[in-house]
Length: 112
Image (cartoon, rainbow, N blue to C red; front, side, top):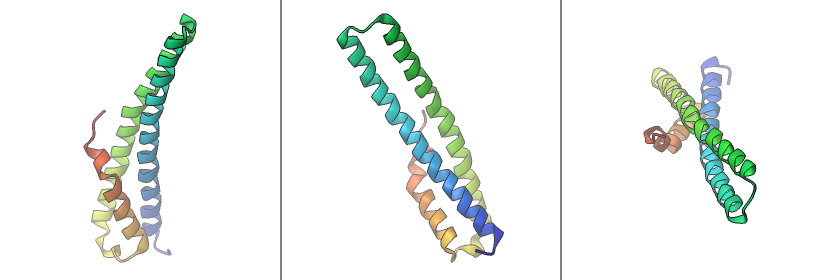
């Protein structure tokens, strides 16, 4: 990997992959925290605990669109690089980046 463009592609691919995973994890966390809140309510927990749990949920909910925004930016950045560097299409890094983009493409269509 002597070509610095390949290194850039590899790094950008990792960023896209990480942000896609991060977004998914925030969505799962929101659901888990909602279940926890309902459990608190069912157990008759203190009003303070319930309010704090609602705050936790709100923080998690706010992170989903922020992560989506960063993901879309990274996705577009990597797409642009791959489009500009088509002569590298035989390189493993390029192929892996293309696979990552194909795998996470559905997330670009979702809006939260």
